[in-house]
Image (cartoon, rainbow, N blue to C red; front, side, top):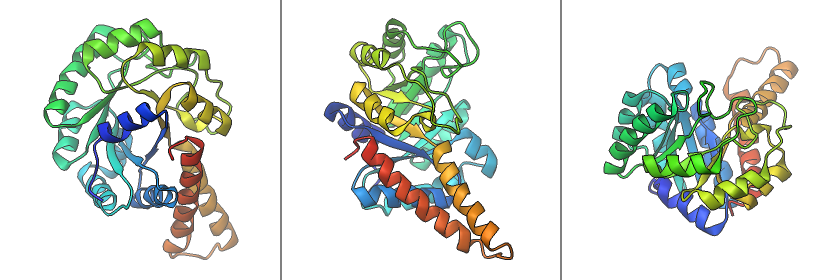
Length: 278
């Protein structure tokens, strides 16, 4: 199936009251696992490559081209998305490679600077038919939208969306990045208020720390794109640890990366059901 645009997947889900799973790619095993999981349940999926993953690989093109190739061979709609890009040149490169969605992260800037930078990137991406996500950030602060205790005000979210022209907005409602335990407490009332105030789909970052039932409730309250990375890394790494502990002399990487990939695919399928993606 040809690659699809972020707009096609995210806007359709928002209109239908469904969630869209957005999962991070670090290695090719992640990309193929995420696609396999989506194919198991027949749901669209977003494959995210973060700026940190680009730094790990030393460049965007190798992992980006591989992910795009895997996505184009999928039987379900797949969006390839640049996640948390703070480097403007990286956005330009992603668009040139064929990414159909980007998340430009200027949330650590002061509000006016965030608006100016995000507006510029949005205009460029829209010229190339690319979907744009952004963060409003913690106004007046430097820790970004997911600082501990940060919350997004509906009036500020509306003003930011209108000023920048973005297609989706990441908001702070109680989740936090890189949580290894699923103990986050979401503000569902605030999610509903943001949904009613903001004219574009809402994005929940840091969703690895959110329990299953609260993920479903978040979608029902108004979240559309739900980002999950650390949780799947836990699944992947857990399988690798078990196999290597049981077979300490094992050296064939396929013997432990393969089972880890299979486990992630199964968990992705389960999560997509939790998110009401189908």
